[in-house]
Length: 304
Image (cartoon, rainbow, N blue to C red; front, side):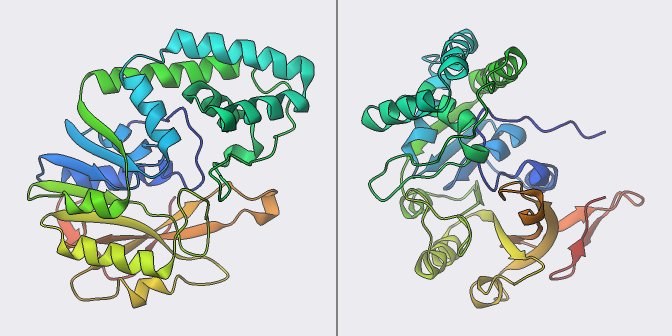
């Protein structure tokens, strides 16, 4: 029986929680000495794969700082509980104006606890920054956001993450994907989850066709295995980069359906077909035969 995924304390658009079982199976099928992520984001994949040694990078310094602070015990579960309870009470009594006080405070002097508070009280858990690097997501309009049960949930997530980090050798770095991939070596396994071109774009994770091309070149040149997540299609359009960048014979592609909860209303939230791209044949265990079998290119498997 598969275990439920470990959920990080950060909410992120495009989080791969539902893809974790598939990615974990792929990781378990490979032999590697270090797990490398050039776009670690919420860290949900690494936290569930739980490699012994990992390099986790992102251009968003606030995400990296949060995990560094948990790793070093500068942020603990009791501290997070106390902070969110106190700030949540101020939000409850003062309402929307207090959210913007914290946002202004964070933009003037960023801290991990303020970042966590904003992430959990902003609109739809979106992480977005303007061109000056200032967090600019509006308020979620839920003054009762930090009820005791909600604070306990986040506190438990911080505690679980701290427990994982205490048992592994992980390094968190704020850097560009080019720098991360330039340092890969034989025996690494790279998991790349870049921003999706034409979809979620912000200051820290803006993405262009040139970036996608550079990523393909860097991954093709890397002396190790890699797995990449990208969007394949939805009911309205297809990702042109699938054929233009990832359609070569040196890449192997399979697909999964995934549902994102980032639209402003239910009717704007649609399923997305995710593509998993690897530089090795992507195979999956057959439940009946317990044998590994090759998936056809662009084979669509709908989640039950």
